Length: 244
Figure 1 (spheres, rainbow, N blue to C red):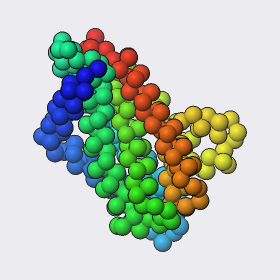
Figure 2 (figure 1 turned 45 degrees about the vertical axis):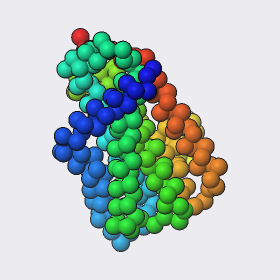
Figure 3 (figure 1 turned 180 degrees about the vertical axis):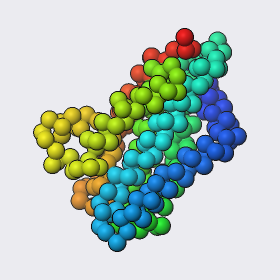
């Protein structure tokens, strides 16, 4: 692995994004638009304050997963990855460079989403706003790394979409958005403990209600971080040079 080559990949991805204003607008604004719509739907009810923290985890996670996986897949289908790997660049340099670039995007996206939810939609937060932002950033990075992992297995953009029922939907259904995890059947609760999005939603809810200490939040962040590192390592190990 080379830090110089990794950062060069990061710079190239950011340069490509800078010339794609539609993707930037989609990444920055769409989570806020969706959260705003739901806040409007549940106006004058306590529902938005209940599900709002989970929405901060949900929409950026899904969007980063889709954008990252499709963008990386196009690199392979266009032959760019094949040409890059003829240089002294390893697969880990490539994956890590992408992860860093989209993580930087995730920081801005999380800041926009959290600010919009709290100051425009009126989401009530009892705990630290900075902690909420930190969890939202890590959650978006989780979507990025899982997207990189999914792209290693997909051959087409259509297959990336097909991976969503496997990578994303179970995490949404069991993450505590529809029903608190402690009210689920024991088997489903046990399964949800192994899904990283569940821990992101738990942490965001804990900050919103301010009913857990910093050690609890830190443990949740460590678990999510471990999933991110694992996804990057597995993505680099399984990445193919080109799509057959």
